[in-house]
Length: 291
Image 1 (cartoon, rainbow, N blue to C red):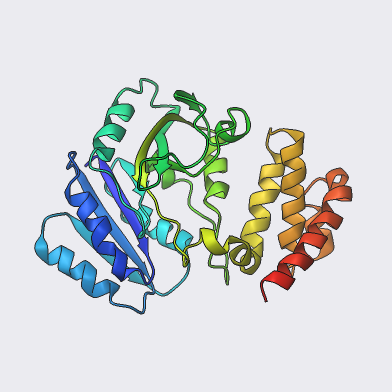
Image 2: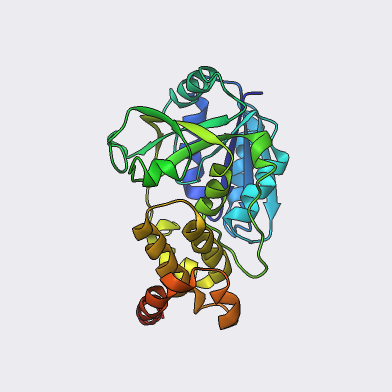
C-alpha cells in the first residue's frame, strides 16, 4: 500500500464528511485512512462507522482517551501500513489530484536513502498558497527550508512511514500538545525532503482549531514547548533565530515547574542574558491575555 492518510479527530464530527468526500474523489486510490479519535464527546464514532459501512474506502478507527494530537499521531504511525504517511486534519481536505501528484513526485526521487519523503503546500479554498511563494522545487531539510530558503506558511510534509516509526513524538505526562516542528527538526538532522511549490492540501483555520489559540496551548504544555525551542536554538540556524528561540524558551518555561538551574542547562547562557528578561515580559503578557 502506498499511502496512509491519518486523521486525528476531536469533536469534529460535523466536518468529517467533507474530508471523507475529498478522499473518495482522489484519482490515486492506493491508500488507507486511519482515524484516531482523541476522546471526542460528539458523534464522531457514529459518523466514522457510517463511512466504514459504506465500504468505499479502507477505514480504520481507533478511540483513545483525550491525550492530545501528538499521542494520536504516534498511535496512527503504529497502525499504519502505507509506505508514505500524510497527516490530514479533520477540518481540512485534499483536492482530487493530491495523492497522484505526491506519488509522482516521490517516484521521481533517486536517492531514497537520504530523501525520505516530499512536502507540498497548503492552500486556501480559492487556491491561494498559504505563506510565501518564493521557490519552485528544492531538496533540503525541514530547517533549511525555513532558515535558508525563507519559505513561510504551513507546509504539508509526507514522510516514509518506516522513518516516522523511529521518530515518535515525546509523550510528556500531563501535556496534551507537542509542536510538530520538534519532530520535523529532529528528522532534519539526518534526512531531507523534496519540497515543491504546489498546493496539495486545502486548509481551514477554524476558531476552535489549534492555530487560533496556540499561545495558550503552549502555556499548558510548557515542557514540550521548552524542548522545541531549546533544540531549535542548538541547531545551525541564523543568530537572530537562535535569539528568538531562546526568548520563546524562557517565555514558556515560566509555566513549568522546572528549577531555574535545570532550565539554564537547556539553553545558551550567553543568549539568555537577553532572552530571559524578554521572555519573562512576554510570559507576564501571556498570563494577562489568557486568563
